[in-house]
Length: 68
Image 1 (cartoon, rainbow, N blue to C red):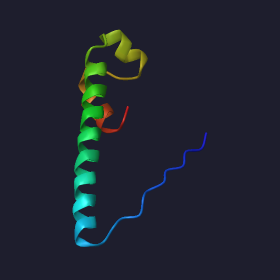
Image 2 (image 1 turned 90 degrees about the horizontal axis):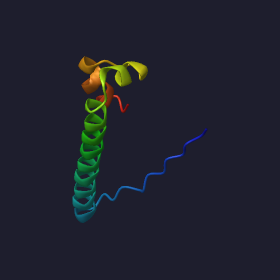
Image 3 (image 1 turned 90 degrees about the vertical axis):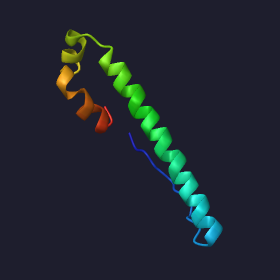
Image 4 (image 1 turned 180 degrees about the horizontal axis):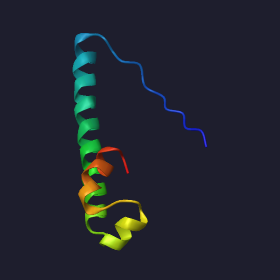
């Protein structure tokens, strides 16, 4: 499977930079929310379910940070 990601051109003027900063801020919030949801999902799994995924409870945080 091939994935293509397109990035909109970045504005370089004053208002463009402010817009980019605001966009980056909201992107960071979205990523933090996704990580939180992944953490909640994994932390609610039983130890045997985690083992089936190749994880243990001590490695949940690392798995979330890697995008599991």
